[in-house]
Length: 583
Image (cartoon, rainbow, N blue to C red; front, side):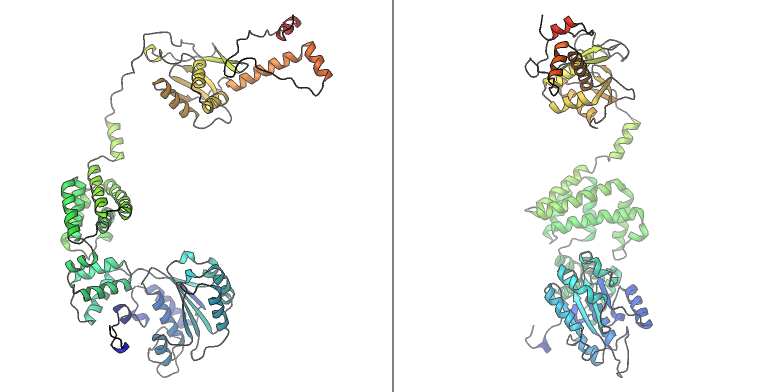
């Protein structure tokens, strides 16, 4: 680039920046609203323009600023959406030297002091223009204090002040600011419009470039006009005017080769797919870009299946489109969706891997490995149509009487350990002896097993939350007590299976069931307490000491059930004296 500005090269993105709304492409909806607003005199005092990079936010703001201050070629014009471009105001704004159009980059002017300058300057009338226009680029970068300082001026601005905000992160702007502005969402430019625009620029530059090459540039730009012009500038400087040169410049693989690579992966041809991946890598294709192209192919084929007319890309060669329709007809949607998810995960791994090529190869191998696996839906349908033969019961010990026809249980708790007895009012179905010989033969044995394994949490849940309905070895039916954990049945089944090596069926029934072990223990303790209080000596002691408490002190070691005789149900004084240890 020459030192003299007159001989300096002007990049295409600046050289072909639109100077009026007629040259602005892809934003017809916004232009229509602004035309109607200007023609009816309903010009808002603040506009916020949002969209991705390079779609024309700052350009639109400058065109609006010119329209607000244009006086026409004869000097008598008013606000218009078709600025003349020749009057003093239009020329000064286009060259960036108009004193009444102030552009502020919020990325480098983020503080409240910068906003104070705007507030102070807004008080004064414009020097030469009709309006004083403030264009704030990347507005979302302003600090919280700066936004708050701007609110009052935004709500009640002087009549001669207009604000134009441009941002790529509209969600970072406070709603208090957005509510005081008119918002315009600038759209990504469609590929066909972008290709036509690039073709016009290339023709104006006297450069012949293939249509497929322009299509690749438009695709890489992702709807950004500025990005597409920068890539076109690079291609012209590089001398690349055909698709192959553009692919090399962008690190892309041939779309047809990507589709064939995807087809190899779907057929499970891992060796051929790895060879093709390495060939594309040697040709200049970035492994991450190749995986991204494969993900785009999965998306394209999926949309072809559900909306062929919408997904059919006219920028692709006819043979590529035909190959895509063929693959879309062959591959189930579930397989394409699974490939999409795996490729998204592969892209994350490739970005963080020390060798992107190795990460891409491992991703290709994984995709090939699952290519012939049925989907979960296929497995379910196969199991429903051809259920597997019932498995033989596990070998057991010799036949025995493991729980009879009336093998239900009643829990009667005394002191610290539960005692279990048979309740003849509850019946349980018989179980095969071979399966139950090695299992706990009654519920008391189950509780003892839990205590032996020192699973305190499960023991507490069983004693306080399980109302037994029926029991047989390998099968428990109960009703949860109030406060029982939701996962009690699953946890108990899993623990017993782990401890006994046999499968347990733990189910929840509708019957009321027996009292829990904790309830039975509490009832027995309360009954014993009441009987002891009726003993003359105890009653006299409590009468002499009204604030005294009757405490129960276990005489056996912790965790060992006491060997106590049954307490007689009557109130015989001699028995009570024996209970207290007196003769």
